[in-house]
Image 1 (cartoon, each protein chain N blue to C red):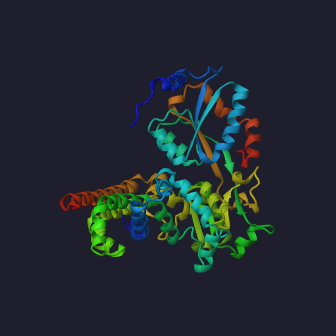
Image 2: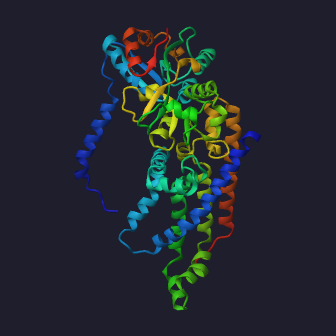
Image 3: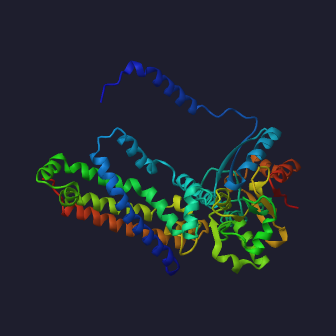
Length: 259
Length: 224
């Protein structure tokens, strides 16, 4: 290997030292607290919009960490430094409370997801007609055992009396994002996704909203974590989620707001 | 463990079929890489190594796009078999062959290169054709390379997760392999079942790898 010309490297060293020094500086002082929020990945987009509105209104900074609900749950149990957990279900927040990792009484439903039936290639017609008539090759849904949207999709199929009829043509995404990917890439031609994945975008094809009465509500619960019980910023964030400003954002992203 | 049996059987079948196809595809490719003086060699080597670098879920996502019945590849498959490549065993095999390709090609290429020019020239001077040379000189001298490449490809396919997650569709008995079943157990907080499956995976992998290293030590192949 050729010898490295050290004097030529000097500017790079200077740059490296400067970069290192910058990482050691404390974060820019905000007027309020910093709230660290663990967010279910399917709620990342609305969470960003909510965080911007919250910071503008309160002066508290928000740092979002996204991941699957199961992964974030496991991280919280093992001491991950989050203040608030925005779950994609109700099971994990309840478990955190039961296990003492979250503050009892702090749990609240921050959003209710709506299910949609999507036919990404359709130019006309109602996707529901295709579902009832069985005119599809593959029906995509999230795994009912893992994902609340998957459980809701299975309930909708049962409500329609189509569960047995569809059984050998079902394909399961690990979560509703993967069910969406199966449809968006054309490998499945009909499927259940979250309205929030289609609302406010140009998803192509046609979709129809599944009546809320056909399945249990897809409730998403938020909870304050025990280590942050005394963090006023974290409590302010939870209160903000129930405010009219936050509810307007939620509806814009295809969610229903709790009563 | 009984409920995991279909996933285990499927995983072993997938790894076996993938390894056999990789022997057929990887051997000529590794031989070409070991002997060529073509200028494109580094490029082909880099492309072969690409699955090591790309995140598996990214590979899986682009395979989904490739498998789309609207594309020539996906469409041809549907008209041939009546089934989509995505969510099928054949699709998993294609994905696994691509994903495990470097684990087949790189050990083979190293083994072929180690045979050395002298042996090849000696064989040629005795009148052996290329196929004869490969069969009676190169292959026996590269036996360890074949064993290593086969085992690494097999084990790597068994442990594969991200690619299968994307293209499989998690259909029990069809595309739900052990790693996906394991992930499902973790996500549904069924940690006991997850531990059992993970333990099985580790024990089998360790046993196979130990056996390979043992064989490699006991039966060293000397070139010359």
